[in-house]
Length: 217
Image (cartoon, rainbow, N blue to C red; front, side, top):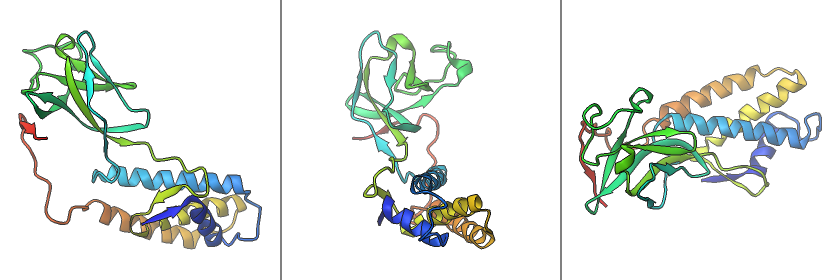
């Protein structure tokens, strides 16, 4: 299910009872909707149910390099894989305190490599053994809502949260009561948080122990 940016703005204006009013200008109302959409996006990202997970194309790290450039729409990392012997192996992160440690002090799995997100790259260690092919699993930034025709991914009408929250922002500027809408927002938030965290209703995720082995292509 999807909704357009134009539909979200129109619904939010109607919910705030501002259909014929320009007390809140169109540009400002658009910003309210964008901010509220970003808030909902973060709620879903925080559920760790991979609503928006993406994966990069295979990235080759050449000899002498020790990092993977992250995508321009990178928001949060979900995992890094390295191709080892024609199969994909998940590699583990290292902590900032371990940044100068090498084999013997760091615990390595069969990939032989560990990583850490630093700025716009995933830094790899040991630096002299990083040559290889990698994939990065990540959460992208929320797609921009600019044009009325831009699409918003509306999970089970959860866009109602965006509509209500944007309407609250508009009414707050007007210094009108938001009590009823605040109650609606609280109910929507509880519903979303309750349902978002159990996306796979077939069973719990399997906890894989350290040294978990390979993810096969």
